Every structure is written in C-alpha cells, then in structure tokens.
Image (cartoon, rainbow, N blue to C red):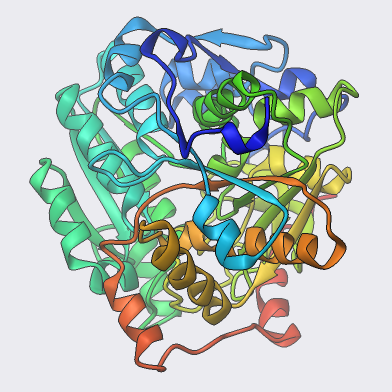
Length: 457
C-alpha cells in the first residue's frame, strides 16, 4: 500500500484494543540489577515491597518471565472510556518541514487527565481496591499523574492524597483544581506535614521541590496510614508494563498499513511513557527482528541519562525507598524549576537505564527554549497544543525529519505525544514573552548530587 494512502488518523476498533500487557523484561537478555532493601542492603523480597506497594503490582514488578500479562476485565472496562487512542500521520508537519520523512505520533491526550498517565492509574487503583485498601498516596510533578490517579481513585472509590511538586503547584493552579474536583487532597511538596518534608525544607529553604521530595512524603504518608499504600506514576517496572498499551496499539495500527518505524522517539522523565511506547518494538529488536533507532529525550536541566551516573541510588530525596540501579543525578539533586514538571526527576527507570546502558537506546538532552520552539511550530501546523514534556519528543522528531531532508532518506519516524498543554499556558506565555531561560547544570552542580550516592557497587 502506498504511504500516501494512509489516513491522517488511524483508529482501531474496540475489538482491536490490546487485552494483554507486554512485559519487555521477559525479552531482555540480561535483567537490570535488583532493588535493594536500604536497611539490609540485600535484594528486596516481595514482602519488603508489599509494605509500600499493592500486592499485585509487586508481583508484576518482580515478574521477569511472562511475556504477556492479562489485563483484568474491570481495567479494560475503564480503558474503553478513552482507548484505543489515535495514531496520527503528521502530514502537515511533514509539509511544513519539507522532509521526505514520514512522521507518525501516538496521541494520548484524548482523556480528561490530558495524558497517558491514566493507563497505569486505572490499573493501580483497581489493584488497590481489589486488595481491600481504602486509601492511596502519590506524588505528581506537572500534575498529569495526580489528575489521572484522582480520576481512577474516584472511579474505584478510594481516598487519595497527592503531594504535588511545589513549583508546579504554584505554576499550575488549574491542574491542581482538577485534582481536587475529583476528590483528592493536594499538598505542595516539600511540606511540613511529614518528617521528610520538614527535613528537606530545613536543608533547602525556599526550594521549589522535586519529584524525589514528593515521593518521599507520599511514601511516608502511606506507611503511616492504616489500610493505605503508595502508588507511583513512573519509573517502576509494573508502570512500564501498564503503559505498554501505547506501543501495542501503535504497532497494531502501523501493521495494518505495512509500516515499520525506523526511529521511535519519546520524552523521558521517569521513563514510563517512553518505555510503554517502545515495548513491542524493543521486544522485536531484542529478538533480532528489527534495527529500530530508539531515542529518549530528556531536559538539559535534569540530564539523568546523558550526564548522570549508572549506579544504585534512592528513588526519593529522604532516602527511605528501595535502592534502584539506574542512571541518576543523585537523590539530593535539586532540578531547576523548568516548565516540564513531569521530567524533573533525578533518576530513570531501571529498565530504560539498563537498555540505554547496553546500547539499545540513545539518550538526548535538549534545552527548554528549543523544546518550546518545536512545540509552537507543531501546534501551528498540527492543531494540537502539546504538553511541555511531550514537546521534548517533538523536538527530536523535527531534528530527525530535517536530517532526512538533508540526506533525502524517507524514514518512518514515530513519536509519543503523551498529552496536551492547556494547563501549561504560563510556560507558553514565558516563551512568547521572551522571558524563558535555559538552565544547564554545571559539573559542580551535578557533583553535589553525585556526592549523595550511596557507597554501593
């Protein structure tokens, strides 16, 4: 079939919606190093993790053998409210760039939360309810995860406390109010409601916070609240598993038209959306069935993979969570208050870190002014205002398309458009007014974070 005959939007039927998640770990020739119990220094057991996370999420977290895991019917019923999501051929962007490349994007913003986060929020809320829990806690950066989990918690009738990174809490008041509208309690982090928050405020007075800070507070709240568990929106293996529906739908849609991507691009904060997008394509790559170029894009202000260390580190700033082997800037690294709040995390998914370390993924860091330049160009020709996080992927996709223009190669480029930017207008205003600045940490800035790394191999 001629690529010119591919529609602008490729929709799947409800019958084509994936009924199983794909577990990329089952395809990896070598697993990432295990999580370590900070108290003993030994690999975490299921019992260790179940004190913090839901039981079935822990089972999925430790599952390295099952290539596919059934999606429970209750979660499928929830998914049907917003899935399948469309795969879009970016004809207008291609024309604007004058590139021979064929550009596709998977759009995850067609739900009230405005992002891909609902894929895992629904799953984790369901497992919490199934376990008989009455409340859950979490953190959120830009607010997409907090919004998604508030929606899922309301659906499954769970109480929810959301610790929102303070600078995002202040930058995005309307996102905060959506979370409250769905019944959740929102606390700016770091706060004086937890010991972890009070400690961070004492050490970093006036800080705008970080995801590591918010995680620390949410975990502390969970372990000290009866019948409660902590729910995480990124980083962990079971979250990438739930997000595999993004990549699975993308592959089904492309296969219908005989299209094989040459390049797959996603933004990286904790790694969940990028991991979900690449899963079925990476599974085939690990089996020697393709030679796709995978590109993960992160902010130059928080360059965990491009400039970080591949080492064991805490997942939170208070050093109470399990230790993970990952690319990290050190759990005490305090990122600048850039506008891509969902990407301000000091570490990276252990799965993504391992794949990058083994050479399967290229990591790139981009400055936020270049990101917003690409975001506005995309909005003007494609008609969607993208989230700052997603716009990192747009930046790299545009760069790759322009490279194809130089070489004359008609490559197939797929990127993830994880959500919309309608709650990020302060960021767009800053860019339009010429006030947006680029912050790139110095080696001395990074060293402060590296100095906090635990002395483990």
